[in-house]
Length: 383
Ligand code: B12
Ligand code: SF4
Ligand code: SF4
Image 1 (tube, rainbow, N blue to C red):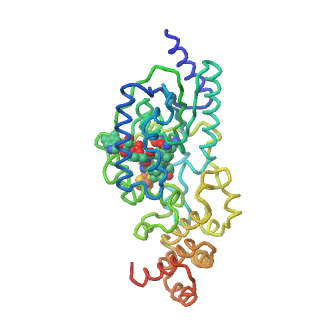
Image 2: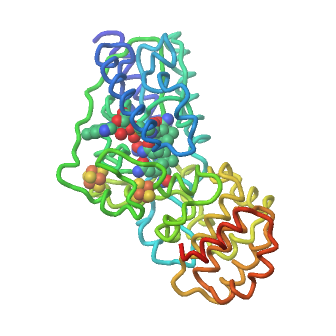
Image 3: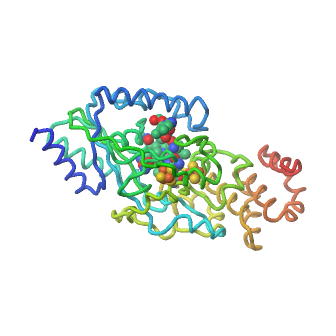
């Protein structure tokens, strides 16, 4: 057995010891890597040129670095692609029925995976340096790396029609991370597409965010709208968001390959009960300090209190049978310091208690926020 094969086997064993569920290898500077980089660059350029990235302007910068590992780090020879299973304890779609509760996406109901996975990646990288003297760089999510196409080439799974990576072993529920290294390691076989004629993920999407299979318009995706988008959410999309208040798993959850899914083994990625269907009224009352304290270990803290409360108000506005307590919770936010919160409260009140909004009109006309004025005008226009 060649020395590189032995090292590869040892890396796989060490990755398993660090808690990674999948570990496979892809070349960074071969002819196949160059072809894949050209395809990725093209796909990314088309996505950005169509404006499908919305306000995520960081996707426009360093596009070349994003498309190929060697463009990000010239010395990269191999990439170790790693997957961590975060399979949920129950069906995420069931929570959509309880519309007085907010639905937080599966990944965000647990400790921030960036922290958990970065720690594992660093431990694996330190071990590799000690074993081989290799140079290494570790990445998870936030770096200009296209993790899904790389993971598909390494054989962790395939990019399904919803564009996420689907695994034969874990279905939709896999976080991705990578270790770039300057040593050559034998590459694994790529995975093939196993979607076949299925269109379940495309059909279930509440906001019709897929212009075509394998292509997403992030501007319509609830995940983007609730996590990345600042300011007001497009009016036409709000009623389609239901009680999603942070991220969305609908397209992931319907995938038939989830029959192979398993509950997350890593206890650091176990569900934290407080984030499982939290009460909308209680959430609407969080001020900045209480918000940061409540969500301190989760990725939700990065979105910021004002955007989060805006999401909660959209969910309150979408309730089918609100009580007086829900109406009062919305009215309380008409006096919020953040104008996007006040304007979202105007919309929500118009949805669930239009007569209450009419009573408050004279007072609301005194609000000098352009966002609030625009919401009131839109209601007058019947928009
Ligand atoms: C930007 C981003 C988002 C954006 C855009 C989503 C997207 N699909 O790109 C938003 C905010 C919407 C988002 C949402 C989510 N995200 Co996100 N996101 C990213 C991020 C930072 C970059 C992804 C990217 O480069 N997108 C740009 C597009 C152009 O890339 P692409 O999808 O690979 O596009 C290729 C295909 O379209 C392909 N293509 C085009 N035409 C065709 C035709 C065919 C036939 C084929 C096969 C391919 C193909 O070409 C393109 C280039 O290769 C990655 C982390 C990273 N650094 O990679 C995480 C990442 C993709 N996100 C992740 C997660 C978990 C989510 C959510 C599930 C979170 C949630 N529950 O709310 C949702 C899922 C929504 C969805 N359906 O995709 C995980 C996915 C893990 C996995 N198993 O795939 C990642 C990898 C983070 C991580 N490290 O784990 N995300
Ligand atoms: S995450 Fe939700 S909104 Fe986004 S594409 Fe999937 S189903 Fe549609
Ligand atoms: S739901 Fe169907 S089409 Fe979508 S990723 Fe899964 S198998 Fe592919």
